[in-house]
Image (cartoon, rainbow over all chains, first blue to last red; front, side, top):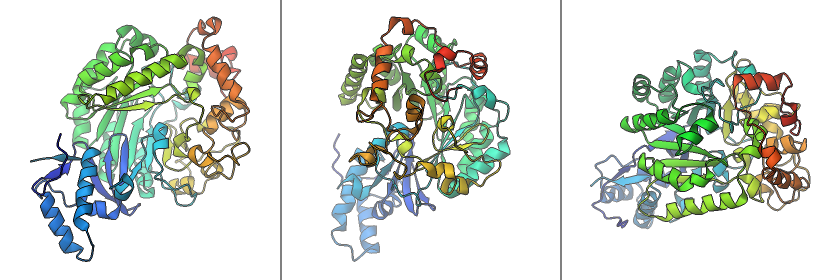
Length: 94
Length: 409
C-alpha cells in the first residue's frame, strides 16, 4: 500500500475509532478497542479538522492560516498524517 | 516524526502495561482512565482458569442496583475515566446492561462489553447498538468442541460461533479473547486461523495468570516453557504475514519471564475496578491482600477512594518497597511486579514479585513449573469455578488444594 500522503487525499478516522476532547485531561484522545492515545495539542488540531471532506491540502492551509507564526508546519502535519495512517487511526476515503 | 511527538499511547489493558510509559508515577496527579465494572460474579460458564475470587459466592447476593451503577459511572467519568469495561462473571445475567450502556454513551465513555456470549440475543445486541455500546469482547476457548466444553465445563461451542457472527452482523469490531493454557496452547495456529476466518479485528491471546481459580488449578493448566515459546513463534509468524490484518495482543506469561510485569500499570495509576458489591479496587484480586480496607461506592465518595483512601495510596509509587526492589535499577519499569502474586506465593505483599529472578523467593516459581510436570499433581481433578466449589472453599474444604497459597479461603 502506498502510504505517501498527497495534498488531494482525504482522510477520516478509522472505523471503530473515536476522537474526542477530554475535559479531565485537557487534551484530545483517540479511543479504540482495548486502548487509547492521548494526543498532543498539535495532533489534536489536525484531527479535529478531518470531517470526511477536507483534503490534506485544506488542513495544511487552514493550520497555516490559524498558526501563522509556526515555522515548517507543513512537514509536521504531513508527518502526523503518515504516522496516524501507519498506526491505523486514519483511513483514506478518496 | 515519532510517536512521542504525536501523542502518548496509553494503556493496552493490564498486561500490556510495559509498552506504556504515558502515565506519570506521581501519586498526586493520577487519573483513573479505565473503569472496569465487574457487575456480577454470577456466570453460566465454569472456567478452570477464572481469575475471579474463589469465595465469589459471598458476593452474588449483594450486587449494586442499576441506580448505584449509573451513579458510579457518573462519578468515575468526572475523575477522568474514559474506557469502560462491563465485565463479570457474565454481565448479561443482569437485565440492566442496556441502561448502563445508554448512560455510558451519554457520559462519553468508550464502552466495552466483556462477555462469554451466553445470553446475547438479537434483541439485546440491537439494544446495545442503539444505546451506543462501542464494542464487544467475546471469549473463545479453542477450535475444538471438546476442549471448549471441557475447560468451561459447559456445552457452549456452537453458541460462541453463532454469537461471533451476530457481533459481526451488527457492525461491531470483532474482539476475541482467548485464554491460553495447556489444553489449547498446541492449537495456536488453528486458533489464529479461526479468528481470521471469523473476521476478527483484534485477538488477545491471554496466557493464564495464576490468581483465584487458576491458581488452585495451576499444576493442571500451566503449559511448558517449550510450548509457550512455540506459541509465541507462531504468533510472530502470523503477525509478519502482511495478508493478516488482525491485530494480535500476546500476553506473555510472567512465570516464564524473568522480570515481573508492571501490574495494572502501577497500583492506583490508571485502572479502577468496581466489583459487583461496590468495592473499589486498584486491581481485580486486591481483596486477597491482608489488613486492607477497600472503599465501597455505597458509603464513600469515589474521588476520595481514588485519591485519598489508604488502600489506593498503600502501593502507589515506590516508597513502600523493600529490598531487593528498593535499590533495584529496574524498579521504575516494573514497580516490583504484582502485590497479589507476591502475597499469594510468599505471604508478604511487599516482597518482590517472585517471578523476578532477583527475588529471594524465585524458587517458588521454579517449583510451580516443576509441579506442573509432576504426574501426581497433574492427575488431580480440576476444581471448576462454580457455586458449589466456591461454597466448599469458603467452608474450608479442598484444603489440600489451597493451603499452599496465602489468603485463599
